[in-house]
Amino acid sequence: MTTDTPDVTTRIARIFVYPLKSCAGVELTESVLTETGLDLDRAWMVVDEQGEFMSQRELPRMALVKVQLKHSEVVLRAPGMLALHLSIEAVEEPTRVRIWDDEVKAYDMGNTAAQWFTDFLGQKLRLVRFDPDERRASSRQWTGDVEALNQFSDGYPILVASEGSLAELNRRLEAAGHGAVGIERFRPNIVLAGLEAHDEDRMDVMRIGDDGAIELKGVKPCARCPIPNVDPATGEVAPHVSDALQTYRSNPVVQGAVSFGMNLVTLKGFDEVLRVGQRVTADWRFD
Image (cartoon, rainbow, N blue to C red; front, side, top):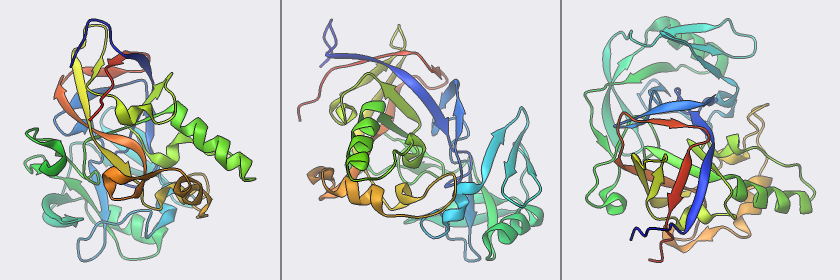
């Protein structure tokens, strides 16, 4: 329930998009909110020869693929590889690919892109682009009567985390003799400042901007896979991040899985712009 005085007022500290699923993110100062999440988020994806999606779970070196957004192209770079330039508006053959339980329409990006990923990651792979005519929706079990569309995200259009949550994890890691980690391991789209650890879990509708033109709602805690164990700087895997989370972040809302961050859906504000520094207000949810 909205009140005249919100329970919490905070701000957007950082914004990320991940144009190529499971590769390095791009930090932005602003991003347009589209029907499927932030503009160009998870628009491209690597698949195997059977069209099954690939991620850092199987290929942690994907973390080393750096992405640069230019006006009309996406530029990919990786150690030992020449840069791969992809036109944002160009695709090749239509195809079908599988992401989790969804089989969706996509476009193959051609043999040059396929060879680039095959060479870098060491197995036969192809690169695909999401078909904008496809309507891939989040689970209605969690979104209710909201049709929340995604491109190649794991299941929801937007992920939020907070600086407070990361600070608490790093406090525990350092107490256990490990180094601090960055928020990049958790692949959020929005990072909030000024919250206590995991307060994002209990915020109700988030109203963004002085006029509240954007409204985002948390619908499901983000159950974490092993990807946070991948060091984004080296592609090396070590279990200490998941081990630390396991000691205090088992979440009964997601059947005891470890959670970090909240999946969001958009209630209002398509085509509006999210900006670093924007005011965010919300009331606490007590369900």
